[in-house]
Image (cartoon, rainbow, N blue to C red; front, top):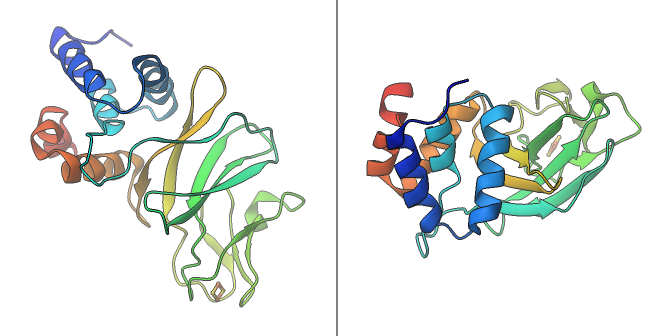
Length: 194
Ligand code: FES
């Protein structure tokens, strides 16, 4: 993969100077996401942007470490938006809203179950695939909305955005960025990409 262009570097510098995260944390996250999500570095840089007081979700550190089979719950992107990050048995990291798409009960992680039935809603026995968020049984009509989670170089886990049911990670990052800063979204290529 070729390195960033001077324009991209300038954009990264501008963003990092304005971010709530420290510059070191920021750069670690960008490096990790660039590899992990395989989307353009400028877009990803923009995706972790947070401007003071804009009311939208900043990157949120949700765990210092997450071992295989472990999960952590948190609220993201808003204070009332229940979510969960899970380290699956193969080491991959996934994040989901835990608001059931049936009648909004809380979805639970069952680490002693196979990933296809790892997420369980006790209200009406809805079951979701922990890797894909898809419904595998019960009444929920839609998959769980995705919470984009990444790991930094120290192993800490961060929530950096959301993707609606059926929306790609890249489209979700672009949507969040457009809500925060339309001009920057344009410069990051979101207008062309989605
Ligand atoms: S609220 Fe989750 S299955 Fe009904």
